[in-house]
Image (cartoon, rainbow, N blue to C red; front, side, top):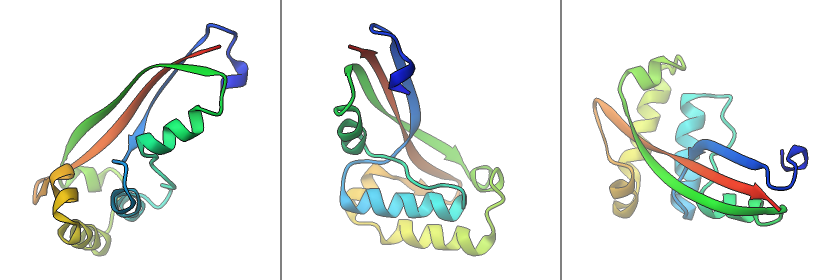
Length: 122
């Protein structure tokens, strides 16, 4: 995507994301895959920076944005079956206390994140 930008051109990305850390990077991506089998990976801010720092870009702004989705609508959009829904809740219940603070959930909602990036091509 960077190669099609002219110098001074702006790159904007808003994508699903996860908090930095082994547990959140692994388990939240596992949840997303169970909900949507086409899901491959939501990058953490650390992973995004690792990718973007290799490119001729200057980062102007980054933000990790918290989102809450209503249940069962979040499942229904992707046609998530009951077995996978139960497994998702099992993963959430087994998260560390630190991760549970980052990813609060209940019977009627789930928390996820998006990462917003604005960069300028050098």
